[in-house]
Image (cartoon, rainbow, N blue to C red; front, side, top):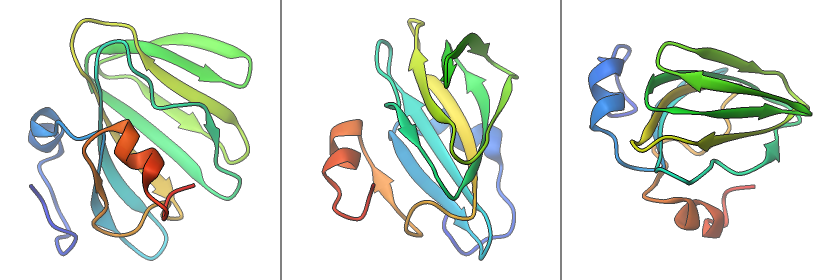
Length: 128
């Protein structure tokens, strides 16, 4: 897997090879790139980032996006912008892992963070 100390990555390969719920790949002063994998029937979990915008690009699978009261399907090639303050969730509605490359501006997680699954992410005292 990639390290925090690079300025370029093969995101397609990294996203397809990532089986972790969350893996921080790159962190700059004002932005962060993270690979996420949501297993079938699972979800990211409803949340709101008050001071962060988030862009999600879907590289595999299919799911449902929920932004405030709006619901819509997402699949490979879709890009979703979640503006700061928007309550949101992403749910894997398919039979295969939902693979996502996401960018936070400014960074949301500690550099180098890896959470194997959602339970580990929720139990991490450094997370929201």
